[in-house]
Length: 147
Image (cartoon, rainbow, N blue to C red):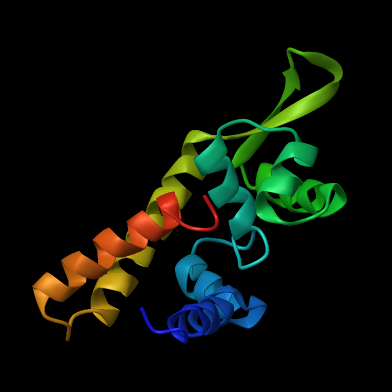
């Protein structure tokens, strides 16, 4: 394997992980889903869909925000009926954030949009290359340096 492949992958990951890249993607995914759902609240919805009910502090570490940022975004989403707060059965002082059915449906819409966006961007690739890329990306994520 050439020595520069690590740099090439690192550069590609840096582009994918840039805040601007994520913001643009989240804007596309959340377009037309209501005032409460935008590029700032999307990570809360998406994070809860991945993890299930979580405290604001636990979700904050999962999605890379601070607890107060999660709480503010969660309030917007709760006011829109997309998540609710439940008492934490293990800590009487804490509450858990959880998706409502409408919140889960919103996440489902964004995931379908994301899958369609990815598939459209790969439409010019030969199908075998797309399958190989998907396989190797999953393997990299599962077994690679971030596992």
